[in-house]
Image 1 (tube, rainbow, N blue to C red):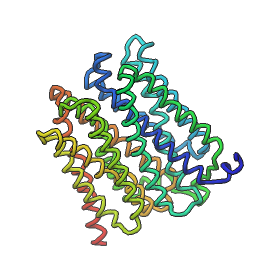
Image 2: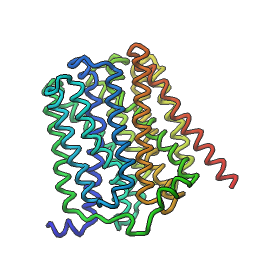
Image 3: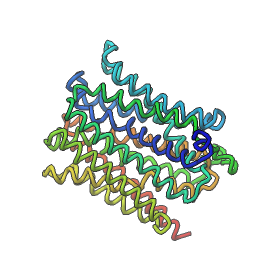
Length: 397
């Protein structure tokens, strides 16, 4: 059995799919507890925003550093370390707040640990999948990114069920249960075959990449993709509970869970039809839908319409992240590991900046998350403008 695993790259894909589920756990379990942290520890919305900023900020730093050390250390060691950091961080989340004099400092320390794991996963999983000697790599990439969405939905559904049965006061137990998944996947990654992306040809140097004009347009798209996605996703649970005046169970299922399911469906559609679609046009229309969803969520007085805005945002952002990866691979051949690392870095800049802006403005508006969400329209507007510029220049060329 072990020998079959070690020779079969399908097992590599399965481990990578689980890796993106772990990424979803790292990014989306804690936001379900924002208002719980506020009640248990007396933490303000501004401080809670710092938890989001720290998570994606650390991931951003890891993305930057990984561009230099991944190829030297090797993918296997790095990806196993990513699973172990994620496991340790989730365990620390359960215990450190109670052990530290200041519970918020405990949350920050746990966040740093699991964010290191999340950052390594972000950098490593896509190039590992790209390096696998399998057919239909575009479909595999789209399917890979959809597993983040299914993981996101599973985190919400299982957490909601757990809280309904055992009570939200037992969230620490659930954190330990989630920690078992990266531990098991670390063991899986010790067995699967892993090829290096650079075995297929040397990638561009970082200096050459930074001098490429198209690279910077892709960076802007990735920043916008991360901000559009996480600007609502990170705040959807708290937004539904506090601003739309629905119960936590209803809010989590109709808000962030619907967001994740529709984002996953969007990525499955992209994986299936990527060869037939004009990706520039598809992303442009998704950008418009994202703008509409932000406006609907922030301006609608009816809770059903507000929740519909959250859900539609998931449908609109699904293609942005994998789509930008595909555009980058198409327009910057030979980008290699460095390109994937910098794209992940840019995405995490957006993932940190989007929800941080929403949280900061919400705090300044007296805890009104609707006002914060409204400011988030700057990101889909920038994405739409960038795509329009690129499409215009393609026609001119």
